[in-house]
Length: 82
Image 1: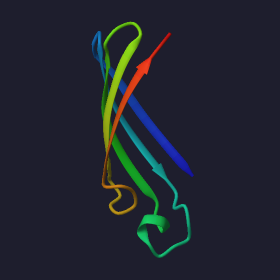
Image 2 (image 1 turned 135 degrees about the vertical axis):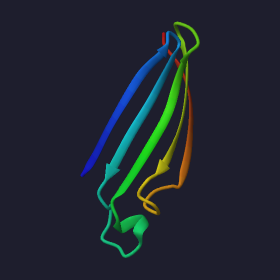
Image 3 (image 1 turned 135 degrees about the horizontal axis):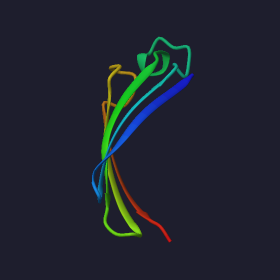
């Protein structure tokens, strides 16, 4: 199984704040918690709309089910729309 839920809030006309919760079943039958336990991750981020064509997205996530996913991840994205 895999499940996810997220919310986005337009704080200002050019800034959107995001929160997302994801979870998934264990990928393998293993004694290692990284492979044999279900995972849960919480992600927080923001999207800055720099212009009609350019967006910058930043987020970080934390494993809330300890030792089942990377402890901390960062994401930075640049999006261009034609």
